[in-house]
Image (cartoon, each protein chain N blue to C red):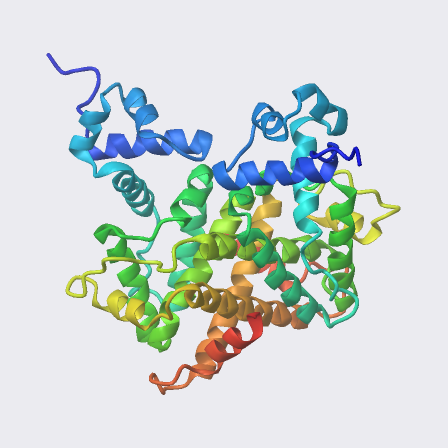
Length: 223
Length: 223
C-alpha cells in the first residue's frame, strides 16, 4: 500500500546501525554509517549533531535497556545490584562500544534522568554528596570490566604448565567451565563491592558536610 | 662506528610498535605493523607466531610493568591492592589495548608466572581453590573498567540541568575536579572490594572442599 520497504531515517535506526558497526569494529565513521543506512552523510546530519550526537544516541539506546527501576523502590543496595546486573548484560551484548562510550562524558538529558534516580537513592541512603558519583562510577567500572570479561572466551588462562605454575593450574582446574566462570567472578565481586559499600556507609555517620573517613583513606592510599 | 640507526627487529620493538598502533586505533593489522617497523610481513613472522603471538607479546610487555612484588611478601589484601593500583596505572597508559587484551585468554608462560604468585597468595590466605581465579578476575574487571574511566575526560557528566535533575547536579558539583574524580572512584571502589573480599574469606572457614556460602550466593543472585 505504498509503504516504503526501508523505514524513514530516524534516530533509533541511526543508533542501531552505529551500534552494529561499532560491535563489529570497535568504532564507526560517518561515511560507513551513511553507507550502511543507504543515505548521504548530509541526510544523517539532518537528524543528528555529528559524531558526538551519534555517540549520545547510542548511549541513550543502550541506557534505555538497563533496569534502573529499583531506585526509589528497593533498598539502595538491592537497587544498585539489580542495576549492575542488568547493566552488565546490556554491555556484554555490545562489547565493542564499551571503550568508546567510556571515553565520552555523559551529556544526554535522557541518561541524566537515569543517573538522577541512582543519585537520589544514594543521597537518601545517607552517602555524603561528594561520594555519590564515586559510588556510581566504581560500580560502573566493575560492570564494564565484567562485561568485557563476559564477552571474552570462556577460559581465562590456557596452556598452564602444572610443573612451572602448580597453584595457577589447580585454580584453573577448579574454576567453573564456560560462562559460569565469568558469572562466578561477577557475582563474587559484586557481593564484595556491596558489602564494602554498606560498610563505608555505616562509617560515614550523619554528618553530611564531612567527607567521611573513606574518601580520605582512598585518596591517601592510591598514590 | 657502523652501528645501524634502526635497531635490529626484536620482540620488544615489535611489542612496542603494536602497542603504539593499538593505543591510537584500538587494534592493529600485520600490514600496518610491518609498515611501522619498516620491515616486510615475512620478517615479522620470523619473530612472532602471527597475530596471536603479537598480542601475547603486548600482554607480556604490559604485564612486566605491573607490580606483583607484594605477593608472598605482604598480607594477601595489601599485595592485591598494590597490584591493582599498579595494574590500573599501566593500562590507563594503554587504554586502546584493554578491549583487545580482555578478549583473548592468557596463554603466555611469563604472564602465567605472575598469576601463579597471585594464586599462591590467595590459596595460602585460605580462599577455596574454586574461588581463587574468581577473586583475581573480579579485581581485574574493576581495574580495567577503572583504567577506562581514568583515560576518559575528567568529568563524568556534563550539561546537567539542575531543574530537571537536581540531585545529580548537586552530586556532580560536589565531586572532585580533574583526575581526582577518577582517583576517588577507584580508591573508594578498591577499598569496598577489599573489605568485601576480607569478609568473604572470614565466612569461608577452614573447609577447603566446601564451595563456601559466597560462591553459591553469588551464582544464585546474578541470574
